[in-house]
Image 1: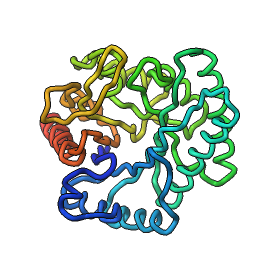
Image 2: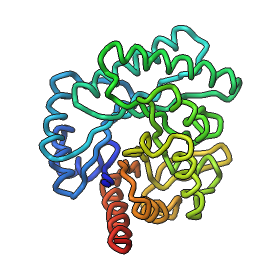
Image 3: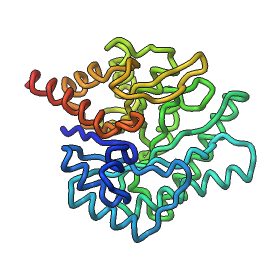
Amino acid sequence: MQVRFGPAGNPDSFQRQGHKSSLDMPSWLKNMGLDAYEYQCVRGVHIGEDMARRLGERAAENGVALSIHAPYYITLGTVDPALREKTKKHFFDSLRAAHWMSARTVVFHPGGGAKDRDGAKSRALALLAEIVREAAEKGWSGIRIAPETAGKPAQLGNLEEVLEFCAVGPEVVPAVDFGHLHAASQGGFDRPEAFEAVLDRLENVLGREKLANLHIHFSPVEFTAGGEKRHWTTLEDFGPGFSPLAELLAKRKMSATVICESAGRQAEDALIYKQMYEDYKKSIT
Protein backbone atom coordinates (compact mmCIF):
# COMPACT_ATOMS: atom_id res chain seq x y z
CA MET A 1 0.00 0.00 0.00
CA GLN A 2 1.45 3.33 -1.07
CA VAL A 3 -0.14 6.70 -1.69
CA ARG A 4 2.03 9.16 -3.59
CA PHE A 5 1.51 12.92 -3.61
CA GLY A 6 2.73 15.61 -5.96
CA PRO A 7 1.83 18.58 -8.17
CA ALA A 8 0.46 19.07 -11.65
CA GLY A 9 3.11 21.18 -13.32
CA ASN A 10 5.56 23.58 -11.71
CA PRO A 11 4.33 25.68 -8.76
CA ASP A 12 5.02 29.38 -8.31
CA SER A 13 7.48 28.73 -5.47
CA PHE A 14 9.65 26.57 -7.74
CA GLN A 15 10.03 29.48 -10.14
CA ARG A 16 10.45 32.07 -7.39
CA GLN A 17 13.43 30.08 -6.14
CA GLY A 18 15.12 30.59 -9.51
CA HIS A 19 14.40 27.26 -11.17
CA LYS A 20 13.64 27.45 -14.88
CA SER A 21 13.74 23.84 -16.04
CA SER A 22 11.38 20.99 -15.20
CA LEU A 23 14.51 18.84 -14.97
CA ASP A 24 14.99 20.36 -11.50
CA MET A 25 11.55 19.28 -10.33
CA PRO A 26 12.27 15.70 -9.21
CA SER A 27 15.02 16.67 -6.73
CA TRP A 28 13.03 19.73 -5.64
CA LEU A 29 10.00 17.56 -4.94
CA LYS A 30 12.04 14.97 -3.08
CA ASN A 31 13.43 17.69 -0.83
CA MET A 32 9.85 18.76 -0.07
CA GLY A 33 8.83 15.22 0.80
CA LEU A 34 6.76 14.64 -2.35
CA ASP A 35 7.04 11.70 -4.75
CA ALA A 36 4.80 12.30 -7.80
CA TYR A 37 4.82 14.78 -10.68
CA GLU A 38 2.38 15.25 -13.53
CA TYR A 39 4.16 16.81 -16.50
CA GLN A 40 1.85 19.22 -18.28
CA CYS A 41 1.34 18.92 -22.04
CA VAL A 42 -2.06 20.59 -21.97
CA ARG A 43 -1.12 23.12 -24.70
CA GLY A 44 0.57 20.52 -26.85
CA VAL A 45 3.42 18.02 -26.52
CA HIS A 46 6.57 20.08 -27.00
CA ILE A 47 9.10 18.07 -25.00
CA GLY A 48 11.84 16.39 -27.03
CA GLU A 49 13.28 12.93 -26.57
CA ASP A 50 16.51 14.03 -24.90
CA MET A 51 14.81 16.14 -22.24
CA ALA A 52 12.09 13.55 -21.68
CA ARG A 53 14.63 10.80 -21.07
CA ARG A 54 16.65 13.04 -18.75
CA LEU A 55 13.52 13.93 -16.81
CA GLY A 56 12.68 10.24 -16.49
CA GLU A 57 16.19 9.47 -15.23
CA ARG A 58 16.06 12.24 -12.63
CA ALA A 59 12.60 11.17 -11.52
CA ALA A 60 13.84 7.60 -11.01
CA GLU A 61 16.89 8.82 -9.09
CA ASN A 62 14.65 10.80 -6.73
CA GLY A 63 11.84 8.27 -6.34
CA VAL A 64 9.29 10.44 -8.15
CA ALA A 65 6.53 8.76 -10.18
CA LEU A 66 5.75 10.54 -13.44
CA SER A 67 2.50 10.99 -15.33
CA ILE A 68 1.58 13.22 -18.27
CA HIS A 69 -1.49 15.37 -18.85
CA ALA A 70 -2.31 15.19 -22.56
CA PRO A 71 -3.44 18.26 -24.56
CA TYR A 72 -6.82 19.82 -23.89
CA TYR A 73 -7.50 19.71 -27.63
CA ILE A 74 -8.52 16.03 -27.56
CA THR A 75 -12.11 15.55 -28.75
CA LEU A 76 -12.84 11.83 -28.82
CA GLY A 77 -16.48 12.22 -29.83
CA THR A 78 -15.95 14.49 -32.82
CA VAL A 79 -17.63 13.90 -36.19
CA ASP A 80 -14.95 15.95 -37.99
CA PRO A 81 -12.39 13.66 -39.70
CA ALA A 82 -9.64 16.28 -39.36
CA LEU A 83 -10.24 16.71 -35.61
CA ARG A 84 -10.35 12.95 -35.28
CA GLU A 85 -6.85 12.64 -36.74
CA LYS A 86 -5.61 15.53 -34.60
CA THR A 87 -7.01 13.79 -31.53
CA LYS A 88 -5.11 10.62 -32.40
CA LYS A 89 -1.93 12.64 -32.91
CA HIS A 90 -2.31 14.31 -29.49
CA PHE A 91 -2.65 10.86 -27.93
CA PHE A 92 0.32 9.37 -29.75
CA ASP A 93 2.53 12.40 -29.07
CA SER A 94 1.65 12.10 -25.37
CA LEU A 95 2.23 8.34 -25.29
CA ARG A 96 5.57 8.72 -27.07
CA ALA A 97 6.70 11.31 -24.52
CA ALA A 98 5.48 9.08 -21.69
CA HIS A 99 7.47 6.20 -23.17
CA TRP A 100 10.62 8.34 -23.32
CA MET A 101 10.32 9.49 -19.70
CA SER A 102 8.99 6.17 -18.34
CA ALA A 103 5.77 7.82 -17.18
CA ARG A 104 3.19 5.24 -16.24
CA THR A 105 0.00 7.19 -16.96
CA VAL A 106 -1.32 9.61 -19.60
CA VAL A 107 -4.33 11.58 -18.37
CA PHE A 108 -6.76 13.17 -20.83
CA HIS A 109 -10.07 15.03 -21.04
CA PRO A 110 -12.51 13.17 -23.34
CA GLY A 111 -13.90 16.42 -24.78
CA GLY A 112 -17.32 17.91 -25.46
CA GLY A 113 -20.58 16.10 -25.94
CA ALA A 114 -23.43 18.48 -25.14
CA LYS A 115 -25.33 18.46 -28.45
CA ASP A 116 -25.43 14.73 -29.16
CA ARG A 117 -24.46 12.95 -25.97
CA ASP A 118 -25.15 9.38 -27.00
CA GLY A 119 -23.62 9.83 -30.44
CA ALA A 120 -20.55 11.55 -29.04
CA LYS A 121 -20.07 8.80 -26.47
CA SER A 122 -20.42 6.07 -29.09
CA ARG A 123 -17.88 7.76 -31.36
CA ALA A 124 -15.56 8.36 -28.40
CA LEU A 125 -15.61 4.69 -27.41
CA ALA A 126 -14.85 3.60 -30.97
CA LEU A 127 -11.98 6.06 -31.40
CA LEU A 128 -10.52 5.23 -27.99
CA ALA A 129 -10.53 1.52 -28.90
CA GLU A 130 -8.73 2.37 -32.13
CA ILE A 131 -6.14 4.45 -30.25
CA VAL A 132 -5.54 1.68 -27.69
CA ARG A 133 -5.07 -0.87 -30.47
CA GLU A 134 -2.64 1.31 -32.43
CA ALA A 135 -0.75 2.26 -29.27
CA ALA A 136 -0.16 -1.43 -28.59
CA GLU A 137 1.14 -1.87 -32.13
CA LYS A 138 3.61 0.95 -31.46
CA GLY A 139 4.84 -0.79 -28.30
CA TRP A 140 3.15 1.50 -25.78
CA SER A 141 0.66 -0.94 -24.26
CA GLY A 142 2.35 -0.72 -20.84
CA ILE A 143 1.33 2.93 -20.47
CA ARG A 144 -2.01 3.52 -18.81
CA ILE A 145 -4.50 5.80 -20.59
CA ALA A 146 -6.67 7.62 -18.05
CA PRO A 147 -9.89 9.46 -18.96
CA GLU A 148 -10.49 12.20 -16.40
CA THR A 149 -13.84 12.95 -14.79
CA ALA A 150 -15.15 16.24 -16.16
CA GLY A 151 -15.86 19.46 -14.27
CA LYS A 152 -18.80 20.50 -16.44
CA PRO A 153 -21.93 18.45 -17.15
CA ALA A 154 -21.78 19.50 -20.83
CA GLN A 155 -18.47 17.66 -21.25
CA LEU A 156 -18.07 13.94 -21.80
CA GLY A 157 -16.62 12.36 -18.71
CA ASN A 158 -19.10 11.95 -15.89
CA LEU A 159 -18.23 9.03 -13.63
CA GLU A 160 -20.38 6.50 -15.48
CA GLU A 161 -18.96 7.54 -18.85
CA VAL A 162 -15.41 7.23 -17.53
CA LEU A 163 -16.27 3.72 -16.35
CA GLU A 164 -17.54 2.90 -19.85
CA PHE A 165 -14.28 4.16 -21.33
CA CYS A 166 -12.38 1.92 -18.92
CA ALA A 167 -14.12 -1.12 -20.41
CA VAL A 168 -12.28 -0.52 -23.70
CA GLY A 169 -9.19 -2.35 -22.45
CA PRO A 170 -6.94 -3.12 -19.48
CA GLU A 171 -4.75 -0.10 -20.27
CA VAL A 172 -7.66 2.31 -19.76
CA VAL A 173 -8.05 3.33 -16.11
CA PRO A 174 -9.92 6.18 -14.42
CA ALA A 175 -8.43 9.53 -13.47
CA VAL A 176 -10.81 10.71 -10.77
CA ASP A 177 -10.80 14.48 -10.32
CA PHE A 178 -12.77 15.09 -7.14
CA GLY A 179 -12.70 18.85 -7.65
CA HIS A 180 -14.36 18.31 -11.02
CA LEU A 181 -16.95 15.95 -9.53
CA HIS A 182 -17.66 18.52 -6.80
CA ALA A 183 -18.16 21.28 -9.39
CA ALA A 184 -20.24 19.20 -11.80
CA SER A 185 -22.53 18.15 -8.94
CA GLN A 186 -22.92 21.75 -7.69
CA GLY A 187 -21.02 21.13 -4.46
CA GLY A 188 -22.06 17.54 -3.89
CA PHE A 189 -18.77 16.50 -2.30
CA ASP A 190 -19.30 18.30 0.99
CA ARG A 191 -19.83 15.05 2.90
CA PRO A 192 -17.83 11.82 3.33
CA GLU A 193 -20.60 9.67 1.83
CA ALA A 194 -20.07 11.24 -1.60
CA PHE A 195 -16.41 10.17 -1.68
CA GLU A 196 -17.29 6.72 -0.37
CA ALA A 197 -19.93 6.26 -3.08
CA VAL A 198 -17.38 7.01 -5.81
CA LEU A 199 -14.80 4.56 -4.45
CA ASP A 200 -17.50 1.90 -4.01
CA ARG A 201 -18.71 2.39 -7.57
CA LEU A 202 -15.19 2.19 -8.98
CA GLU A 203 -14.47 -1.03 -7.12
CA ASN A 204 -17.81 -2.63 -7.98
CA VAL A 205 -17.44 -1.95 -11.70
CA LEU A 206 -13.68 -2.26 -12.23
CA GLY A 207 -12.58 -4.57 -9.41
CA ARG A 208 -9.71 -4.01 -6.99
CA GLU A 209 -7.05 -5.17 -9.44
CA LYS A 210 -7.81 -2.45 -11.99
CA LEU A 211 -8.02 0.09 -9.17
CA ALA A 212 -4.43 -0.61 -8.13
CA ASN A 213 -2.72 2.77 -7.93
CA LEU A 214 -5.83 4.84 -8.57
CA HIS A 215 -4.96 8.14 -10.27
CA ILE A 216 -6.55 11.08 -8.45
CA HIS A 217 -6.65 14.82 -9.10
CA PHE A 218 -7.57 17.07 -6.21
CA SER A 219 -7.88 20.80 -5.57
CA PRO A 220 -10.43 23.30 -4.28
CA VAL A 221 -12.66 24.46 -7.15
CA GLU A 222 -15.01 27.38 -7.70
CA PHE A 223 -18.07 26.55 -9.79
CA THR A 224 -21.10 28.15 -11.42
CA ALA A 225 -24.38 26.69 -12.69
CA GLY A 226 -22.40 25.38 -15.67
CA GLY A 227 -19.84 23.58 -13.51
CA GLU A 228 -16.14 24.25 -12.93
CA LYS A 229 -15.01 27.89 -13.10
CA ARG A 230 -11.48 27.92 -11.70
CA HIS A 231 -9.09 26.22 -9.29
CA TRP A 232 -8.18 27.74 -5.93
CA THR A 233 -5.95 26.62 -3.03
CA THR A 234 -6.31 25.41 0.54
CA LEU A 235 -5.90 29.04 1.64
CA GLU A 236 -9.33 29.94 0.26
CA ASP A 237 -12.76 28.78 1.35
CA PHE A 238 -13.66 26.49 -1.55
CA GLY A 239 -14.43 22.79 -1.59
CA PRO A 240 -14.03 19.95 -1.69
CA GLY A 241 -12.04 19.28 1.45
CA PHE A 242 -9.46 16.51 1.27
CA SER A 243 -9.95 15.11 4.77
CA PRO A 244 -12.78 12.65 3.92
CA LEU A 245 -10.81 11.18 1.03
CA ALA A 246 -7.61 11.01 3.08
CA GLU A 247 -9.44 8.99 5.72
CA LEU A 248 -10.95 6.62 3.15
CA LEU A 249 -7.60 6.02 1.43
CA ALA A 250 -6.09 5.12 4.80
CA LYS A 251 -9.00 2.99 6.03
CA ARG A 252 -9.25 1.03 2.78
CA LYS A 253 -5.49 0.61 2.55
CA MET A 254 -5.57 1.81 -1.04
CA SER A 255 -2.65 2.49 -3.34
CA ALA A 256 -3.06 5.76 -5.21
CA THR A 257 -1.34 8.74 -6.75
CA VAL A 258 -2.80 12.09 -5.70
CA ILE A 259 -1.95 14.95 -8.05
CA CYS A 260 -2.75 18.39 -6.67
CA GLU A 261 -3.93 21.05 -9.13
CA SER A 262 -4.23 24.00 -6.75
CA ALA A 263 -3.56 27.30 -8.51
CA GLY A 264 0.11 28.16 -7.99
CA ARG A 265 0.38 26.25 -4.68
CA GLN A 266 0.06 22.75 -6.07
CA ALA A 267 3.19 21.45 -4.31
CA GLU A 268 2.44 23.12 -0.98
CA ASP A 269 -1.15 21.87 -1.00
CA ALA A 270 0.01 18.39 -2.04
CA LEU A 271 2.15 18.37 1.10
CA ILE A 272 -0.86 19.40 3.20
CA TYR A 273 -2.87 16.56 1.66
CA LYS A 274 -0.04 14.13 2.34
CA GLN A 275 0.09 15.14 6.01
CA MET A 276 -3.66 14.64 6.35
CA TYR A 277 -3.32 11.16 4.90
CA GLU A 278 -0.34 10.29 7.11
CA ASP A 279 -2.23 11.45 10.21
CA TYR A 280 -5.20 9.21 9.38
CA LYS A 281 -2.88 6.33 8.56
CA LYS A 282 -1.20 6.60 11.98
CA SER A 283 -4.53 6.76 13.80
CA ILE A 284 -5.80 3.62 12.05
CA THR A 285 -2.74 1.38 12.45
